[in-house]
Length: 556
Image 1 (spheres, helix red, strand yellow):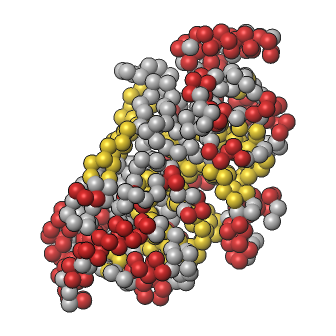
Image 2 (cartoon, helix red, strand yellow; image 1 turned 90 degrees about the vertical axis):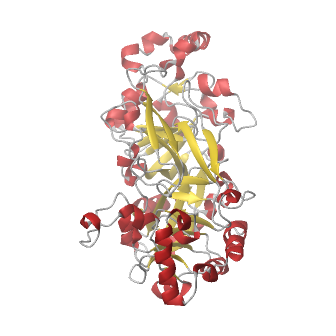
Image 3 (cartoon, helix red, strand yellow; image 1 turned 60 degrees about the vertical axis):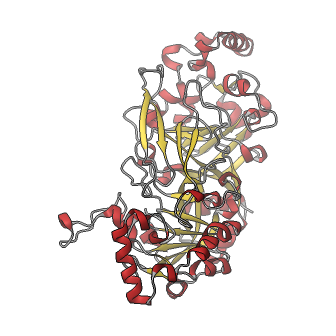
């Protein structure tokens, strides 16, 4: 399949967003940290932050919203999330609807799964128990017998949902499943987690139901030594991971096959990660067999820099810190995970600057539909044309690639090689001397109706059109002299302050043209050309910007 047909195929494929809204109102796994969002600066300035942008600090545990539970959640010697290749996270799979076969505290079995759908070896398996109806972002579940006339959604989603039977995990290993996703709070039965002791009255109800249906106590059905070995050692050693809190458009895929992807933030130190879960089905004009074969052969270029406590933040922003508040050995035998609380401002590592970062009346990240984050686009490699403090132009972009109306535009300046994780790392050069756009660039992007822009450096604006100009006067003088040599104009002649301060932010964000920063990693091997490009950010409902996974797809 040639490149143009491949991009057309992906652009016209049926796309489903299976992600739960991630909000300060999203309940975390019981006992974990809820999401907190704090503005530490505003466009006009705020205490401790200075002027220039809406900037937030987030404090959270990753079990809020749709998330990938990595190997190190159970097994400290497992792979870090950043070390799991995209090929292990994406592929053919099936969404199996067993909602008519389960109820509160039920056990589901491999037989129930296979009765409803064709599950194949090597698949991704998503289980629709029906308990996503209790997600906080779904309508109320009316029940006249319940207190207040509505069911407790938080208890339904997190405490009373069904879970796998004892033989389920061995079956999953035998089937070589890539990962298992569920539309509720946990891929384990809640009574095989600390919820058993947090909510003892619920456990009594669950065990009474188990005795009635199976004639066994909970510990007879799930012997603790065996259960610990299976979930904390055997599963992670076999690289079988879980994705929890899958919601969104899951009901549109009942008992259907799809090409499914979980796109987690690539944490280096953290055991669980926020993620976007999406599914693709063939466009109307293509047969399923041809589509899935093309997707199986497709190459994914991961442009996301690993996310770490060592990631440098922009200017005066807050770096990432990670605090483990629970460990596998610190709770009742066999019933614990490693769990951490993270704290960070958003503008570090690979992230999408959202509209609200500079445009207070804009949309939050979570309010932008998935369709606006994905689509046809280009990577423009101008690395041979730029150097320290260079100014690049639309003409440079169009010299190396054809940019079409509505494209996503990824600008490869070559500055990724100075990032913190590179052998050629040069943090000052990366942060303060990267190239930036010419005075006509924003207008050109608006006329082209660019969907969004990505750059392989710390900002889409030239650093000397930001506060860095004041903080680094020596570098500004060097940049100013270079501009005079290259263009015959001084900085203030080419970039009048009132018109061009934070040009790419202030002139484009009101037009819904935003940009991603700090792209890198496999972008090093991506030549100029057309691609299908995806920005898979967490569906953060109050966030001005957000981390995610940034991927370019091409035919295999």
